Length: 586
Image 1 (cartoon, rainbow, N blue to C red):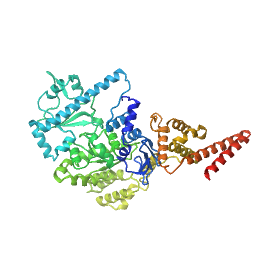
Image 2 (cartoon, rainbow, N blue to C red):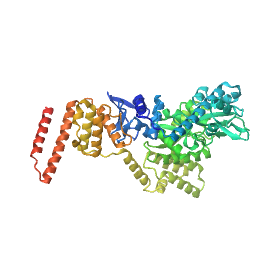
Image 3 (tube, rainbow, N blue to C red):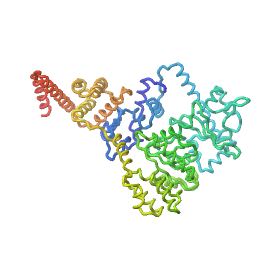
């Protein structure tokens, strides 16, 4: 990952509309001149405990303790490192960044990769122009129309057409200054006995992009029955790795963040049809089994995943594998993960439904998505032998494996009733087969996960007083600088934070160290607290400082008595502080 100058980082942070960025994840309402609040996007809660400072661009949740700056927010919600978060925000804000001086080899590798991105982007634009302007592509346009796909949505996804000529892309790219080695590295050509020739010819072209929208490769669909294989993807190369990306992830990111769910379909046209129907959070697995890397990308987009795949046996098997990969990827992820299944009619894919029944029909199906556990039970009951006692026993055993880990809930009761009805058994017998202790392990596991995510250590009164004082220092920087004294604080972290604030009171977020997450999180908390202190005054800052000073003197008196030392001077100092407190309280 390239390193960028501090000035670049500051320009990106200044350019970001933090309210707009966070509002894509949770609904915010203004609660003061320097504060917005809402429900935390990092844990489930009913009462809002999450706040942001739109000026300093810091956030803190008083429920789960999550906090940091604008870069940390993107790192947590997108599951990326600092460098990727910086680049994503730079792309979003249109800020050109400057790199620090690089190792020559690293600079050369970066330059080579930039060249690959450039030729891929250029080729994608060429394919789009050819699709809509070339007489040769008339049958490709007819195919898209027959699938019910409008030109506008196809242009949004940069759908194109590759010419049938053997070397059109190769020749045009050479003319633009790209070498055969670069074209091979980008996966645009293949080597033959007479030199290189275009890899994609006479096909409908779907650009495969990363979450920043950079074209990495192509998926190509044959339009003639004789042209095999039906689908041809870019080969693994320096720019593209098939198992790491999802089709349309760049287009779907805003819709997924806003809706709170991401819809996973299989084919390119399925995804495009869903977007045309208003389901703007749809992405595609590109027709292959979902990899762990792809699953990780899914759960970074939204806390809920809806599987919208063919209802045939192969599609159902793919959903089972996809759910397992998503569950693995979601382990320890900041966002809660749920998986639901969209009930597609047998033999129909999303593009078919949009073309045949319209956008409302597919949106209704999305709205009727069922929990994955229900899908598994339905699948077991539909495929089981219910005509014999032995067959029902086997089916019940399979169903039990799905229901038993579920905690007590309405869903669990519904699945017990469903199994009993389909198997011709009493609900009591099904419940007995599940066992009295069913769900206990799952409940314990869920409780532990909930505790690790939601619960946070309650601050004792002393630590709370210290944090309140530092928050007032942030609220009244002109009055605070001479009041921050390391002797007032009880822990290394709070003293370290006080030292940092002493130098950054006017702009606490300007130089947050990304190698000290504890400090960054505490500063974020203090800034958000300061935003809630609008009715306060510098006098409250003075009172808070005197209370801390009084506590420090009391601790010194206790230590002196324990060691047998005189305490008369400390007692006089204590009376002075008490007198000052009384004066400020009158």
